[in-house]
Amino acid sequence: MSPLPLRIPAGADLRETLAALPAEHGVAAAFVLQGIGSLSVARIRFAGAPDCTDLYGDLEILSLGGSLSPDGPHLHIAVSDAQGRVTGGHMGPGCVVRTTAEVLVMLLPAQRFSREQDPATGYKELFVTGPASISASL
Image 1 (tube, rainbow, N blue to C red):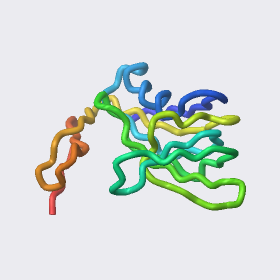
Image 2: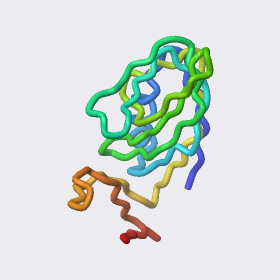
Image 3: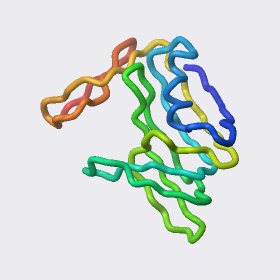
Image 4: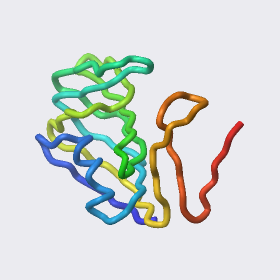
C-alpha cells in the first residue's frame, strides 16, 4: 500500500481527476480514504435515482470516499451549502473544485479492482483479486 495525498486545484473535475489516478500510477486498485475542500458544482446521484441532481454555489465537501478501478470510480460524497444543508450520495461527473480539494488516496499495487455483474443485486459490484483478497457473502 502506498498513500497518495493530493491537493486538487480550482476548476478541476474532481471525479475525473480521481478516476485517472490508477492508470497514472500503474495500479489497478486504489481507495479514496477521505476528502475535504470545496466545490462550485456538485453532481450527486441519490440512492435509487437514475440521474444526478446538480447543486451550484459555495459547497463544502464534508466527506468523500470510495474505490478507484480501471472500470471506473465508485465514489460517495457529502456536501453542505451556505445555509448548512447537507446533501450526499454517489458522486457524478462534473463536480468542479471551487478553491481546493484535499484528498487522501491509498494505492493498492498488489490488488486488482473490477466491476462485475452480481446476480444477487443486479448491479456491477466490486470484485477484488490479489494477495489476501477476501470475498464475503452472507
